Length: 468
Image (cartoon, rainbow, N blue to C red; front, side, top):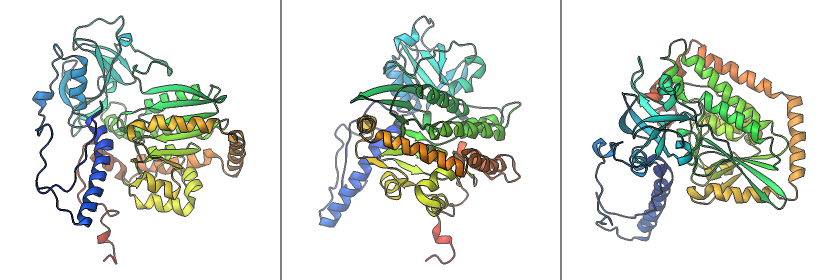
């Protein structure tokens, strides 16, 4: 493979392949690159070869990933699925139909209580996932890729949506927001006390950061619920892999092939549900709110984070705060109110037009985020909770909340939030229902992983007039 200028290692945690790539592999690659540059600058010679400590590990074919439900225990099932996530998934079958499995989580004995079934049987549902029995317990399967009549290729969907008729016959294992740490669910809430002040932490973790209509509605309901609690600060924490990437394009694409539905209608439902979440955060005026980005954020998800008073991001987070790459989509989530408030009108306009990724340190520099947490990805939540506890107990917090209430009232008097929403949605309505099909074409290409015919103009700057 050539001379080795640098190498980096990291402990392998129990997480999906995609999550490991996004965090540990990315940070190790950056560290090794900087080390290599330093060696090159210093005139050091590279090593001709570096033997792998445990030997080379070859390709892992589907035959080795295949799950034997009659023999594999839960740990083995989880390992096989995590090694295959986010691509290519584990080839399997559900309800007698071929599919690929993704997004696995361990099930507790409490979730399995009172449920019979043999290994491999599907027993229950929760938050779009299906509970499947193993020889020693069970696993939640959150996403499956299935063939849909008329679709160009299989679409990865929430398991209960992909098998809607079958899931409708299963019991739903609903769990409260406050529960044991090992009881899986997409939403979770906890409280912490600090010097007489209370911090609320609402966590949400949606697969790949996509937020379907149903997930937005559940998150909005959770916000309404936790706002009834007597806390001084609410930390809104996204998932380890992603904070949010906006509306769920896969669910929208599937709607195009569902009788009596359309991609335009599902897009409209989804963006309105996203806006409801943003509005619930913006109008939380009786306490301070903080968005925590432990993972990446893009499109509407990046602007959803701005709905909070402060935005904190782990040092390795990447943001894509723009919409236009998705068929010139205008965007919503109150971005026309939130972005100029932080960046100024010119700054917001430049950000939207550049359509380029933004690192957490760069986002801090321009004011898109307020704090960059210099900790490993796995430590971001604990670090943020400690910082938030101190903020909740700070001497001037009450004054900040009062200023926030005054500013929000002044902004509302100047221009109501409903006006921003109406203007944004009028543009989005044209994207969804108008004569220009660009959004629908771009979404279709994205979901089915069809490449661009040529490099997009915002990346191919050498093609612009006057470029040198």
